[in-house]
Structures are given as C-alpha cells and as structure tokens.
View 1 (cartoon, helix red, strand yellow):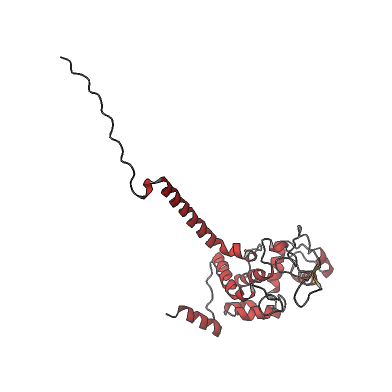
View 2: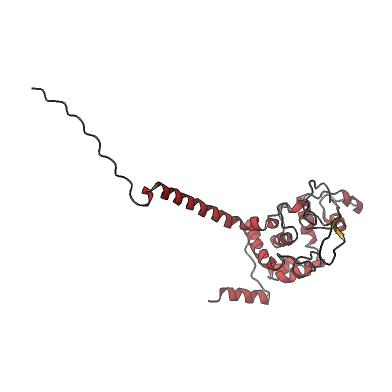
Length: 247
C-alpha cells in the first residue's frame, strides 16, 4: 500500500515586535527626536559662525595667530554681517572690491550724526586710512603713494594690510600683550581707531563681549596651527583664571 504524501505545514508565524518599537508612531517620534538632537548639536558647533558671522576665519593665510584672533574680534564688533569684506558703513554692500569704494555714507546717530563716513570692508577702514596703509603694506604697492588709489581692496588684501598695520611699533607690540593675556588693554589701545571696541564713542551690543569672543577665536586660531595658548601673565587675568578653577 502506497503511503499518502505528507503535506508540509505552514511555517510558524513570526512573533509580533514587542515594546517601544512595536508602535509605528512611536518609531517616527523617536527618529524625529534623534534628528532634532543631531541638528541642535550641529547648531551648537556652528554657533560662533551663525551668531557672529563677522568672526569667520580670515581669507589671508599665515600670520600671527594672536593678531589673527584680534582681527576677527575687531570685525565681530565692526562688521558682524554675512559678507564683512563687502559691507559699507550703515549696512549697504558693494559688489566689487577692485578698489576701496570711497562712498561717504550718512551717519544717522551718535556724536558724529549729520556727517558721513567712507568706512568700508571687514575692518571698516576709512578711505584716507586705506590709502595710507595700502601705500605701506599692500603687497602690490609701488614707490608712488598715489598708486594706492588703484590697489585692490580684495578680502585677502584687507587682511594682509591690517595684519601688517597691527604689528607696527606704534601699537606697542600687541602680540606680546595678547600673549600675556592683556586683552582689555589691547582693546582699549585700539578703541581710538575702532570706536566700538568697548572704550570708544560708539559702543554697541558686542562691545562688552569682546574679551570673551577674543578667547574663543584665539582657541580656534591656535587649534589651526597646533599651538597652545600662552599662560596669562596679567595679574587680573591670573585672578580670573584662578577663580574659574577654584573648587
């Protein structure tokens, strides 16, 4: 007698997922929360460039990291906008940087109200100041100072001219002062030129934050070069450091 064929039974059903992930809407909420956390983390990392666009790294390559951090601090107060190299006094922009724009923009408030200013670029240099500095420090300068009127105002040259200017003896060795932690003394010295640095006649919302901003930018500059920050030698700076680590 021939045995009847065996009919295979259905495979056992897989168990339904249990727990938190069993619910589709819970899964979606969890994934959304993860995405939000990741975005917040990126925003936290990018916060200096989002909140302080004027502090973006210089276009110029090389140079003293302490002076570079100082230049970025100056622009945090003077030109804290998305296109700092192209900004004019008052907030308008220029499209070309072939040369200093020399546009006299009206001053609407402050002690100079009613006058106008030719300040332009990341460091808000007046036209006369630019001509003087470019004739001394622009890499394409000639022996004739009058040629400075035709020199490029491109971002790299703005950086290079100001970097060289801040290393002139007239300022009293700013790099050495910064290495000693004398940030406020340096800002005070420069406030006659850049009046928004906290000790001038046109303070703004950034002025009081500049010492803290400088330290943040210095850490960034030193990280790019692999250097470590010099131990502060200024007595006030030592006191603040000691209070910061005191249990």
